[in-house]
Image (cartoon, rainbow, N blue to C red; front, side, top):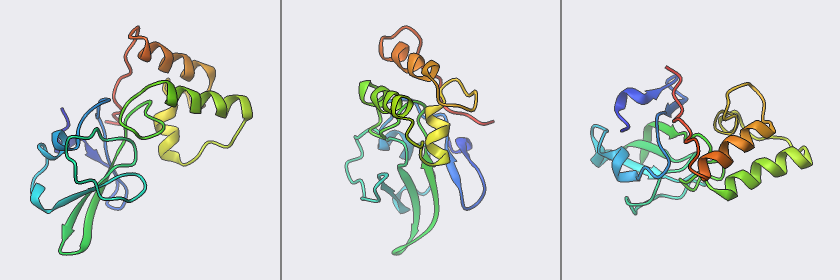
Length: 146
């Protein structure tokens, strides 16, 4: 379970770590204080009002003071590259396309979630680890930096 202790990082770059695939917005809200003052936004910045949806990479939990956000933390889910809250073939395809086409991998946060084996590079081994997770052979561990 996610607990407030899993919110790490500098004041302006907080991350919610330890989030497993399929964790819902409500499950994270249940672990946070002052949840009535927290609004949730997806990676594109749209407010999420359905608390039963799974959180994906880039979801932001923002503490609001009126209409202003005074604090925020971003969710990271290892292997959920497209940010839909699940680790599946769509995520594996994104990694494979990146390797085959040598496209530039985006932001540092994506590197954290796409570098499954944490060797500092996106390689075919990362694709293989996602494949094994999808097949139920070896599940991916949640991201923790502690």
